[in-house]
Amino acid sequence: MSDDNEKKESLNFIEQIITSDLKEEKHSDIITRFPPEPNGYLHIGHAKSICLNFGLGKTFSGITNLRFDDTNPTKEDVEYVESIKEDIKWLGFEWNDKPYYTSDYFDELYDFAIMLIKKEKAYVCELSAEETSEYRGTPTKPGNESPWRNRSVEENLELFAKMKTGEIAEGKMMLRAKIDMSSPNMHMRDPIIYRILQVPHDRTGDKWNIYPMYDFAHGQSDYLEGITHSICTLEFEVHRPLYDWFLDQLAEKGRTRPRQIEFARLNLSYTVMSKRKLLQLVEENLVNGWDDPRMPTISGFRRRGYTPESMRNFADKVGVARRDGIIDVALLEHSIREDLNKKANRVMGVLNPLKLTITNYPEGQSEELEAINNPEDESQGTRMLPFSKNLYIEQDDFMEDAPRKFFRLSVGREVRLRYAYFVTCNEIVKDENGKVIELLCTYDPASKGGKSPDGRKVKGTLHWADAKSSIKAKVNLYDRLFLTENPDIVEEGKDFKSNINLNSLTTIDAFIEPSVLNANIEDKFQFERLGYFCVDKDSTKEDIIFNRTVTLRDSWAKIAKKK
Ligand code: ATP
Ligand code: MG
Image (cartoon, rainbow, N blue to C red; front, side):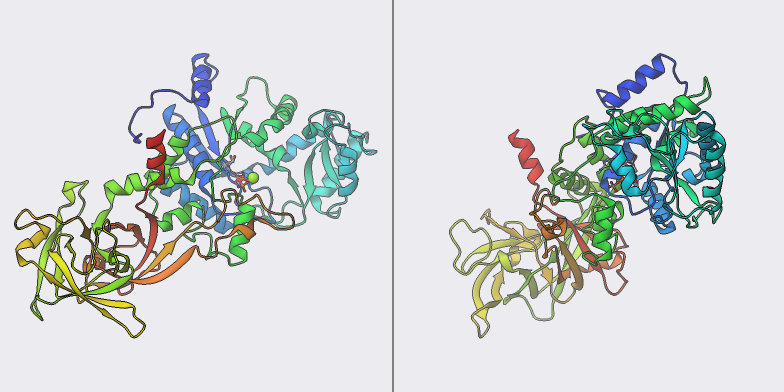
């Protein structure tokens, strides 16, 4: 599997384009950018875009800008700006210089608009929102020209200035590019380039009562920053002629113009990705905030126990495509298992405890047994595990009426307790409802370390927890947040939330070996036989909370094997 340091054998189509641009000496240096709108936390689709853009910067020894597309002050927030910066750093990337903001270019963009007006390529339009959409026509029917389309340059300049100073109410006027109302491309039908929004902006205060539309700001911001390759998702392919049209009018001769290249956005099965929908989940308390470990946000994955390496490897494996598709979430889960298998130390923990008492083990005695920290990484060494008469095993490692092939415990059967001893179950204790609450076992003192004393074999090896020395920890068992592969497909009258898995979080108390008391927040462990778990950020020294990152069962590895 690919490693960060491993050289890639073949170039993807974007790398091929850049390579040939460099060969043709179109540019001497490559500049890419990642342009999030600070209206929510970043999700794994953004992670894909970050890895792609920053990755291209690295591959071609260029630079990558971070630019906040902050053109809509009604939806944007500094909390989001901070979280975005943190997520990019956590993923392991560094932006060039300082973060840029589209709002840094409001003056230039305004001047561009004036230039268009002076060239008779823009006009102040007074159609209402409904009228505007009526006049636009449909993809199969040409639009109609606005009655305000042929105002004089002077009048346009005067009205645009008034829009800016706040003398004109919201919704009364807008500035539109004068292109072609009968273009087969709807984006070319006199698109709106400035709208009145009489709201202050985080970074420009109340200087502006008008704000540029995304389409007017985006390409020009790329141009102003000298971006050479402007990578974006496929839905912007149809906007490209418009971006080119703007720069045809506005760009200086000889100055670098961004080359836009589109790729398919990442979609994941069992996941919704749109920030608007993620915001709904947060606002309606369907999850516990943006960094809830069930959220597909970068901060959610981080809290869940995903590593930056696993996310970068995932982005790599997904690759870049020119056609939309849905990636199996099992591939993402495979990526984190692959990484944690190498990195996470093993510990013993029992999630659903069943008492196991070793009747022939001396009362009051205890001993320490050596356990390997990570069989995949010898350098991690070993640790000592306390062991005594009273233990816990997992409830489902015992069966009263066990079939022959059940290799765990049942009355009369012998198993290995990992790193400890062979034990045989002799008797069971039931409560008044007939539920098994305790197993009475004997151990073979000659099997210390779990080694067979005489060549006799046991089929099963169980994990266990020592009752006295184990700590009680809260464990959050997470399951997928959505029940269906594509949560956006819903019955009439319902929305994506109808596909939510109401049992996506189960919190239990578990017994974990005492070594985890030294763990720090975000430390990751494999609980033997159970899965990978990560110390939650709300843990304290006394009360450790674990989040289950992922179970051990790797359905992707199985699929990949079959192929
Ligand atoms: P959403 O539609 O999920 O709310 P967005 O596209 O509006 O996301 P932006 O903040 O505008 O979010 O996106 C920043 C960058 O991330 C853009 O270049 C965008 O193309 C890219 N991006 C967003 N979602 C995905 C995705 N699912 N896969 C790949 N890239 C994405
Ligand atoms: Mg967007």
